Amino acid sequence: MKDLLNQPLKPLNTFRIDGITRRLIEIDSVKEIDYLFDNHVFDDKFMILGGGSNLLFCNDFAGTIIRLNLKGIQVVEETEEHVFIKVAAGEIWDDFVSYCLSHGYYGVENLIGIPGRVGSAPVQNIGAYGVEVKDVFYQVEGLFIADKSPFCFSAEACDFGYRNSVFKNRLRNQCLITSACFKLSKKESYNLTYSALNEAIKRKESPLTSSLVAQTVLEIRNAKLPDITKIGCAGSFFKNPVLPKTEAEQLLAQNPNLVTFDTENGMVKFAAARLIELCGCKEWKYGDVAVYPTQSLVIVNYGNASGTEVFQFYQRVTEAVKEKFGILLEPEVNIVC
Ligand code: EPU
Image (tube, rainbow, N blue to C red):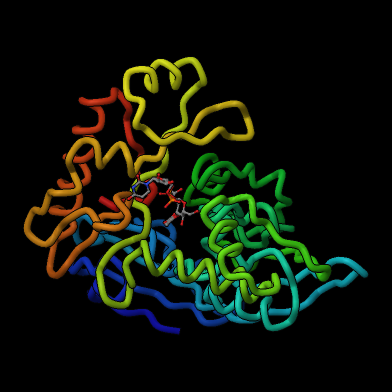
């Protein structure tokens, strides 16, 4: 365990924003969690940090950042068709994906390459290439911050939505997630509903395996998204806006070059990347902040941008899209001000 004052923010966020957190507590085992309650850490301003790959610090953090480095991947139950795997919150999401690939468990191959930790996966309902965490989710365990009582939520209780869950809404900042349990298939099954993935796999002409799917997803990701070990960013900065069908049809009639996708609930999702491009934001560069050339949903920090500079850039993009299309883009990253 570590309990340190005045620590640099830069190693704690993939946007590589510099600054200071007043206090940083790292917890390495379930037993050590008591320390947080015994020392009344939650009485003051705090935030729970996962991999730091989906957030923007606008300023120094005048509170305590808590990181749960809990480790462990364990098969807790097995049937003929399924395996239930309990994964500690501090495990790296991609390590869990590798574990599933190497053990022949199907369901998360499309989610390879997503940065972050397992504890954040249900909070965000992370998703890519046609699959979301909710599709393989079984339950999540942890403690309520208010009274240290344990909880165990099913998928229904998590109320998953597009990059959304109960942990971002009704239970925001109220839960310490210690582990998540996933239900994977032992029988070969693939989700190739995402057309770009489907087409890329067809072009390969190799036998369909989970490794082939994972490899292809990585190739698509690498071609479009920045390498976070080299360039500061937090993945998609914006959510793709979702509009009711009638509103969407009107907008499309006026702007036929917008890209849309029908969603499960009859709404229409607009590719925010295209909206951003049509506003000319792709050419913008303010200091070290810019839109990433091959994926316009991503804002990057090419060097030493401050949190405020990134925040101002985000606001400029939002204003441009609002002015041209009347759509208010919502951030997908957590903005910590
Ligand atoms: N598009 C553009 N310009 C671009 C990129 C995309 O016009 O620069 C258009 C294309 O027409 C494309 C469509 O947008 O067909 C969708 O693009 P893409 O498949 O790249 O997906 P996305 O909607 O831009 C979402 C997720 C990504 C995830 C990909 C793949 C969100 C906010 N983002 O991006 O997730 O990897 O789908 O499934 O939903 C993340 O959450 O951080 C993230 C990277």
